[in-house]
Image (cartoon, rainbow, N blue to C red; front, side, top):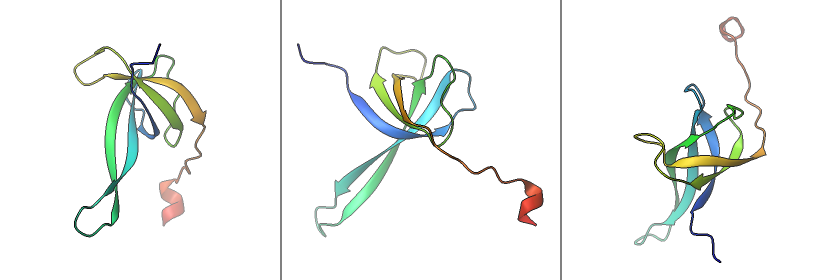
Length: 93
């Protein structure tokens, strides 16, 4: 039987909420008049049960039942762990 749930692959942008991550999914679209490819970012709020995702991680999210007002997706798997550079304010000046 064919899987009915949609899935997307994207990058974690934010994990400040409890058991919720914001995942940015980039999809290329073709501009009809000029035939130029434009990347379109869509942000999804996804459920992360164990709070494992960190910003910069590449994750696969899967469609699920409504979990809250904005959450309709859940994290199916973490594909790669991202490395986000932490910059302290003392290092900038």
